[in-house]
Length: 86
Image (cartoon, rainbow, N blue to C red; front, side):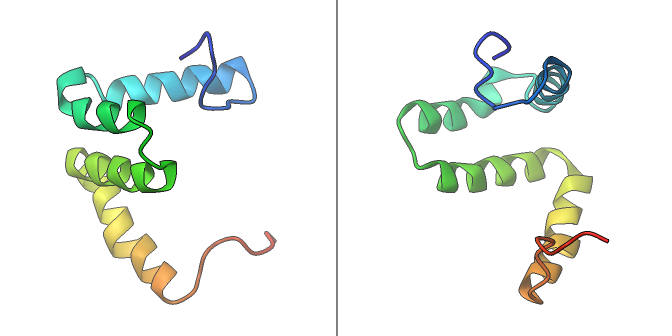
């Protein structure tokens, strides 16, 4: 990952942070084998991301709570966070 920067990190420091985060979230390749198969098989990225978020939510209760309790509720109300920052 570091050699090819497939995640599109803008700096080596950020790439290191992404690598460390992924390593912490996915320490066991067997646990993410279905995600790897989908990615290598050309599964559409937009749908693969949903599978990734589901997987991370299963592993991390705080992340799951954020997605389900806060982000989903705000998204349903039309609050996307894409507006201007003040």
